[in-house]
Image (cartoon, rainbow, N blue to C red; front, side, top):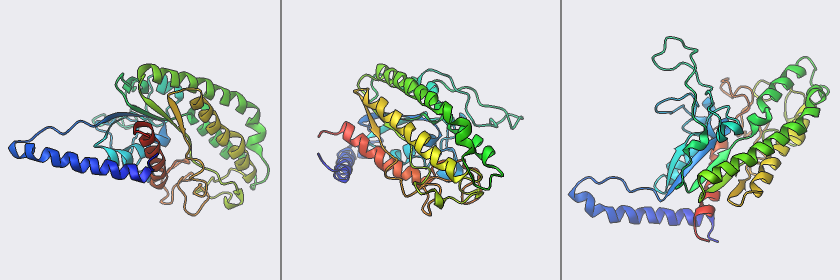
Amino acid sequence: MASFRTRLALLGSAAALTAGALAPAQLVGAQPAAAADYDWVALGDSYTAGVIPAAGDVFEIPRDGCERTDRSYPQVIDRDLGSFLELTNVSCGAATIEDVTFNAQVPIGRSVPGNADPDSPFAPVPPQSDAVKAGTDVITVGVGGNTLGLGEILFKCLELGEGSGGVGTPCKDALAADIPARLTKVGTDYDQMLAKLHEKGPHAKILAVGYPTVIPEDTSKCRYNDIHQFFSITPGDLDWLRQDVLEPLNKVIEKSAGNQDSATFVNLYDSSEKHSVCDAGKWVEGILDTDNRMALVHPNAKGHLNAADHVTEAMLNAISPN
């Protein structure tokens, strides 16, 4: 099998040849751009859409409130491989698996241009699966954290850890019993979603994108009450979140992808292991980013660049001959 970088080089050569072949026609008059070889649909939640300022500027045209940013991994890949892959990016901040499969979602964005009410919500967006067509070649989907209730869990851990001095596991004590049922729902919903995506795009390769490392294995790196890390979540609760919540979430997604012949799991966890919220070279921001902007534990541009590398490799493996 050709290596990832060899394939990129071959694609680059093909682009140069195509440009050369079109040159004579361009001398006689402007020609429409050549169609891309493959149709790609990007689905997912805020870990795909970008959402936070540390993942770039919101670029939606027209804006729909999903808060996609220009340095999120679908847009990075689109800039690199846009001549070969025609991207339709309908990822949306706060999306659940059901929002991808069949729900119309009310986006997280506010302040519709021209509306006097700055808190006015955007109109609901269609289920993300609507973007998948019979001719779609590649589907990437990164979702599951909101179905698990990860944001809700993190906020509860912040609340329960406040004033603890970093001692104990107040969040684990309150929530641990509920996690297995939440993970079961993620698995059930994910199976249903993959079946729906395969039904709508029967020839498409589906890449189920997992979540990166957020919490380090050594939680002594995490400073209690540091707003740029996990603020008031205790080290004991961080250990629990990593071992019993986040790592199992990835395992559920990987298992579901393994049950669908057209799906492949894309592992972002291992490659980001040394780049957690508490590492010096972080690829995921803490509650606030380093510029004191709201981040709420989301990947920054470096994290999206890493995701782009791994998703690109998976896409080329899926669509290129062995």
